[in-house]
Image (cartoon, rainbow, N blue to C red; front, side, top):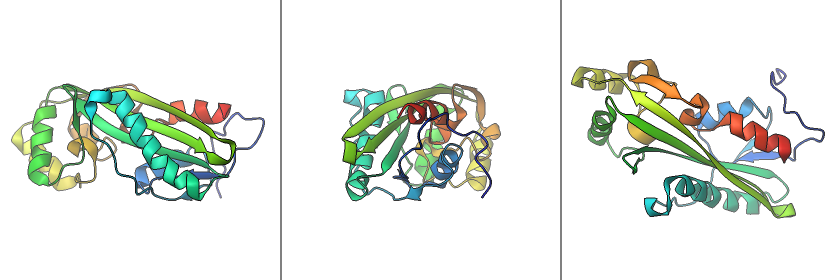
Length: 199
């Protein structure tokens, strides 16, 4: 196995790690920090109530995903995450179909929106939990209908919040990213690194 190019600065090794997600994007991002871990998706039902605050909503959803997996692997460090796109304080989740995806991209066109990822770390055997979130601001290019149609032809968006993926043809639709690009993709590796180093 290729050694991790950016090892965590820790005096003691981490407990075995479980990622409570089967997202290939999160798997790839976590591998930048932890070369070996188990993938065990959570079957938790996510909340959609933005009245609790958008950062808290993402953190609570991450916690809801983490705890069922932590019960299965109490001696492991479980990592769960939830990413949402917010525009005008409204959450844009995964589009139900291509019509909804087109509508989302039209709304995002030429606008600045927030991408928030909530993360929850749980190790049940020592009764320890940490929740945090990271926010990135993304400005879209002004999109014509042909731009939207071309993007949807190239990228499968139905499994992506906000109907887009920064890592897939993102240059076609995104103008500026302020903050963590990894956070937009699904896991804020910079913040997560600090949390893992202090765990």
